[in-house]
Length: 139
Image 1 (tube, rainbow, N blue to C red):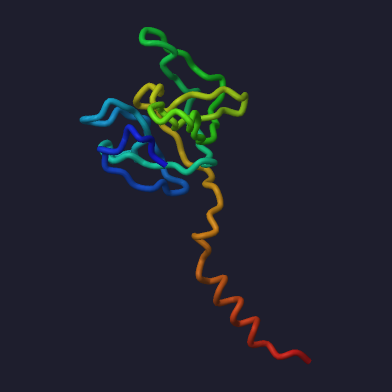
Image 2 (image 1 turned 180 degrees about the vertical axis):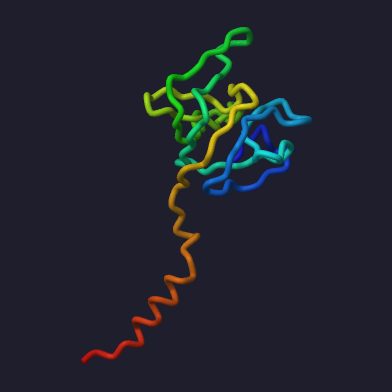
């Protein structure tokens, strides 16, 4: 999903295996992920999507201070859903640290290594296999 703050930014769904870059979107007051080579289009991640960064992740701790994680792998989460005006999109690292996407320093790259299972995306091939099995006559 894309955070409420990206309502006025063109967006698309994430694709497994694609490379993303953290960015500040033009004409927006927030940051998020874009596909490499698509700086003005927000890439929307589903909760549970796993990312592998090229390096440890740098983020804003405050208006004047930045920090780095010790980790390179994170899972996309949504947090503070009860607060309508908070940035919900965040990354949870394997050490338990949570960093909001809106705090990421622009220019960091990551690859989508795994996306959560979605039963509505079941391939049509399974339906075909099932109907072929139904045609087998018992001995």
